[in-house]
Each structure stands twice: as structure tokens, then as C-alpha cells.
Image (cartoon, rainbow, N blue to C red; front, side, top):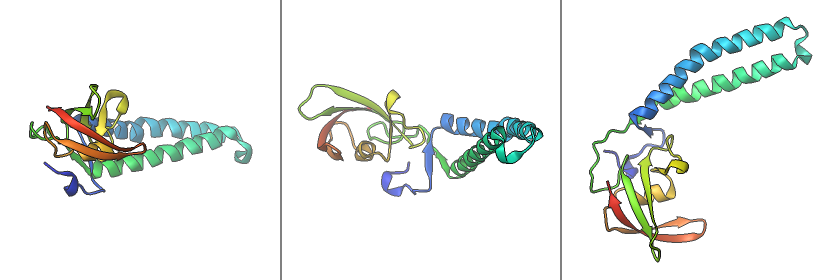
Length: 162
């Protein structure tokens, strides 16, 4: 299992589910979306003068944005490492569910450690390269750790690793 110091900045770590989503989106963009945009461009060209044709310009902008997204997804897929559940249950790693408690507080917070493409704080998915995520990697239940935040250094204790 890769540790943070082994992570290549070009590599993207994702779950199999996220990888499948990226492949599905890429296929949709390359087939369905490109066809829709081509039809919109053809229609807009048929309207006449292209220099003052807002529909044509909008279709070209959409085409450019779609091609950029395709390029980004192709690069991501090429450099993606799929994270498996072969993690050590006692140590924080990818896919770990971690419960932490801030020093001086009784409130606990639970996060799942994921790759940066899957991070979503609304559902408590924390990137392994975020300040908190990086500080958690490799730690065990009972470990006390400190990390830097905009409000200053924060100290937490790991209550549970699953």
C-alpha cells in the first residue's frame, strides 16, 4: 500500500467506483456529447454570418470545454492507481474510516480517507493530501497529532481506525 511519501504527484488515487465513473463520463463525452455538439455547430452554421452568430460562438465554447474535459479525464485515467481494500485496519491509509477528537473537546469527527479526485467534505471524504489527511496517514488509534490550519496549529487524538 502506498504511503504519502511514496505518492508521485502525477498519480491519482481513486476507488474502483470512482475509476468506473471517470471511464463512464469519458465515454459519454466522446460519443454522445461530441455528437450533440457537432449537431449544434452544424445548425448554428446554417443560420448564416458566423461573426455575429451567438449560437455558433456558444457551441464552439461548449466544444472547447468538452474537449478540455476529455483531455483531463484521459490524463487522469492514464495516471490513476486504483485503491484496494488491502489496508491495515490498525493504521490510517486509503479507504480508512477515522474518528478523531480535538484536544480540549468531547466532539468527535469521522472521515474516510480518499484520493484527491474523490474528496468531498459534504460527505466526510477527506483527501490524503489535504493538511488533515496528510497528518492522519500512517497514524494509529491513540496517536496524538498536530497539523497546521489557517487558524493555527490544531491537536487531535485518533479515537478509532476502521
